[in-house]
Image 1 (spheres, one colour):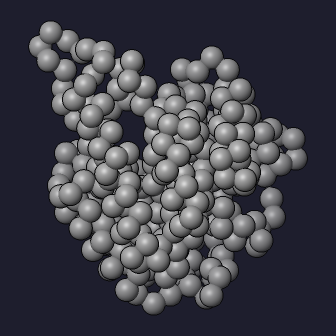
Image 2 (tube, one colour; image 1 turned 90 degrees about the vertical axis):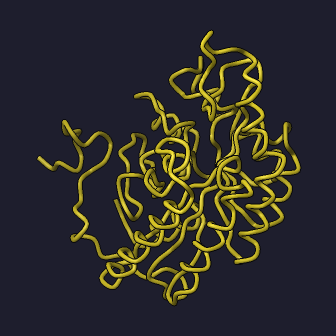
Length: 299
């Protein structure tokens, strides 16, 4: 039986193909390595517990509203995102904007700037609430798509779930909604790959990082931003060497309330200077990576 078309115990919806077996064509312009920058902008609901915290709750327990942690996140909307815009523009680097669709009405200036910079907008739910905690996944997916399309005039093509959380139904619902790619499964590989969905559609997993992600480095593991620089540079060097045999992708995930702070933004500038200072490197969005992969593969 062809194992590519049945679910195996440890594979989930990912048909297994070892890295040495893949030989992909170069990126547009002949580049061998693509930098994929994902900037996450979210709506945290003031009247609910915060999705993440810089300060632990006081001895009396968590409180709602959680003023210090809400204010910490709000720094990203008010200040940090604008530093990210300016730093990426300095390097002529476009990003994929992973965005709760309510940002379109809560913080329209962010959507306007991202659109003006040529960034791709990717639905990230409606507010920062995992898909396992919403009442109607299908309705949330449809609302997120519709709100981004109404705000930008362009129908989005992919998805990143809040906290990368899915239910057993999520992937199929994304395919049924007509989306082409999903970043939730992106930590599994250095290049895109097919995910198994029904209905004759293709759903492509686009690389999304856990290790080269400022949430993990700065908020979870509590390292300084220098650790993010070290990881990104080390990852780049290894991927660049491997790209001689087949192209690779370096994904870097950023959050405005972390990398957009005054003490971290210069590190992002150094990362971009290092990576983009090499030949045979291009910057691509998730949709562009999807098109590159689809153009040379068949399922």
